[in-house]
Length: 425
Image 1: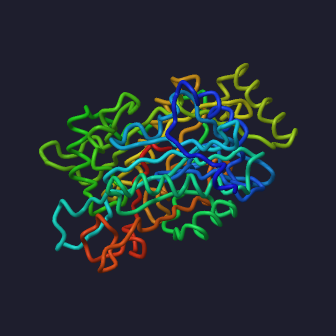
Image 2 (image 1 turned 120 degrees about the vertical axis):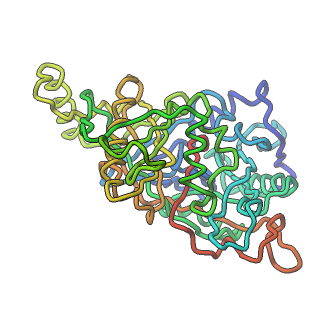
């Protein structure tokens, strides 16, 4: 009887916008993902909402503090970049009240295979991304989340997706029970979220390091040479479109000054791009002790009145704030780590020009060498994210439909480098 009371259909902005915004508000939780329900809010991070990563649910909760994330602006912002995307809403009862929502998209991404037997066309596979699952607290345990996920998977499979991905946190037992238990998703990758506060003062970039801003055509060429599909997982096939996106504030290359000018490629270098997420996300730290709030406020006051002291005061993170995301981080050569740190300082200096930006962050694979280099504060970072994956249907030989290779991506070891698309954060 309950199933007949649930109706899933596509989102209509005129009819459903206010109801979906209210669902986001009601389901907003700390990034620990603890919602006290078996109808979770799946979160992203390159897959489903995380980040997070990423995100009205799912990042970190340490010592009573939680990081809250609110999606703002375009409700399709995290999936609109994909040619095939959808938002589904669930209505319940005779009143046809909107009580649930989920977003999904399909896109071509790299598998990170290094075997030479694969042609360049087989380096990419169509993957479904499920994110933004929300169910009203007053309508949980009615099978609404199950029906939303089932319909979203069917929609993606019909468009040729070989795999489905979602993301949550290890502490979100409800989300894991739904996806890993009921829908047979398997834990796959464990990215780390590294955040650093944006201070009022400029970060110093060593004189020995030179930072160049690459125009989009050169940025595309640089990533094609330095980050081939075989070197990273989830690298989007439409990377040129991402690098040309209006919210990509720039791609930056760091090299050593005084190096050989006649070499085609410097011995050491670092590369990264910066994405402005202040227009689509608002973050806020909750649950902080009164003493901590007071001490940080005092540090800000001291910095305002005595800026020559160069006090590294933390922005007011207890009110909604925005963030810049660093993506595509690469480094090479003996001075690569130092050059990457200089690029992070340069990105900080770019971020401090925007009053709405309080945190600079990056999402990286735990085995990525860049993860050990990126400056971050523990209280702004998290290692709880879990990306999960499943085959969206299998052929007679057991391979995922739409994946014509012999390898099963769900059980293959990764190359260590995860490309987290900032458009899906």
